[in-house]
Image (cartoon, rainbow over all chains, first blue to last red; front, side):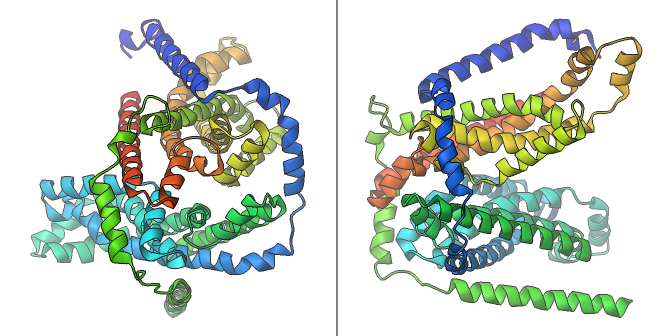
Length: 259
Length: 257
C-alpha cells in the first residue's frame, strides 16, 4: 500500500464523489418532482390495492392457462433459435478461431448495437410488420436472445484453455475442425446453462411483449390492468412466477445431469 | 452403468425434441401480413428520415426531455435503492440482528425481485399518482430486491481476519463496522449499483407504458399512431443513451477495480 492509497490522501476524493452523487440526486429528484411527503401520506392507498391483490380470483387461472402456454412456447422457440444463431456468430466475435482482429471488432460492435435495442421497441416494429400474435413475440425474443447470449458465448470462448487448440492446430487440424472438436465440447456446459438462464429471462419479459400485442400472457395482463382487475393481475403474475420457478428447477436438474 | 447413462441422455434428448416440437407448433408460422411491403417501406422511410424536429423543442415534451427524465427516474430509483439496501444487507447477512430478522429481510428481497417492474409501476401509480416519481419508486422497489441480495452476498464473503484484529485491540462493534467492514464492501457496492443503473435505465424506458413517466409513453404513442419518423428518432435516442450509460459505467467500474 503506497501513501497515496491511505485514507488521508483519498478523503478529498471520496468527499467529492459523495458531493457529486448528492448534487445529481438532488437535481434528478427536482426533475421528476419527487415528493416523499406524498408517498408517506398516501401509503394507505396501497392498502386497498394490496388487499385486492391478496384476494386472487383463482377461477381466472383456467382462462389464463392457454395464454400462459403460449408464453412458454414463444420463449422456448425464440430462445432456441436465438441461441442457435448466436453460436456461429460468437465464433466470429473472438480471435480464437478466426485469428482476425478486424472481423472481431466489426462483429462485436454490431452485437453491441443489437443489445441496446429496447425489447418493446423491437416487438412493436415486428407487430407492425408481421401482425399481432405469438409468432411476432417469438421473433422479438429471438432478437433479444441473440444479442444477449452471443456476448456470454464469446466471453466463454475467449476464456477456454488455449493448449488444446494449439495441440490440434499442431497436428494439422483446420480452423473449422478446431472449432467443432475442441471449442464446442469444452463450451457445452456453458452453452446449456446460459441458454436455460436466458429462457428464464424470456419467460419473465414475455409480460412486456404482450403489452404491444406480441402474444402470450401479457395480453390478458394488459386488459386486466386496464380494467383495474387486480384480482386477475395477481393470478397472472403468480402463474408466471410459478413457471419461472419450474424452469429454474428443471434447469438446475438438467445442469447436474448433463455436466 | 454406462448403458444407463446413455439411456438417460437419449431420454432427455427425446424430451427436449418433444418440448421444442410442441413450442414451434404452438407459435405457428404466421407469415408476413398482406401489406408488409408497404409497411416495411414506410418504416424504412421513417428510419431514413427521423423526426429531427422532435429532438429539441424547448418545452420538455421532446426527445431530450424524455431521455433526461428517463435517466433521472433510473438514477433516483437506483440511488434510493442502494441507500436502503446497503444497511439492510448487513442485517440480512447476519452480521447484526438475529437469524429470524435476517431471513425475514432476505424474504422481502425475494418478494420484491419477483414482482415485474410493470406491476410495481402500477402499484406506485396508484399510491402517488401517475408521473415520473411513481416510476422512480417502482425502480427503487425492484432494485432493493436485487441489490439487497447481491450486497448481502458481498458482506457474507468478507473474511473475518481484519474484524478479529480490530476487536483484539479493543474496537467496539461500530468501530469494526466503520474501519474494517465498510471500507472493504463499499467499492463492491458501488460497482454493483452502477451495474444496476444500466438495467434501471432500460426498465425506466418501459415504465412509461403504465403512466409512470419517461420515454415509454411517447414510444407507445408513436408506435400506435404509426408515425415511424417519430419512432425512429426515439429508437436512435434510446440506442445512443443506453450505449453512453453503459460505456461510462463500464469505465467507472474498471477504474474502481
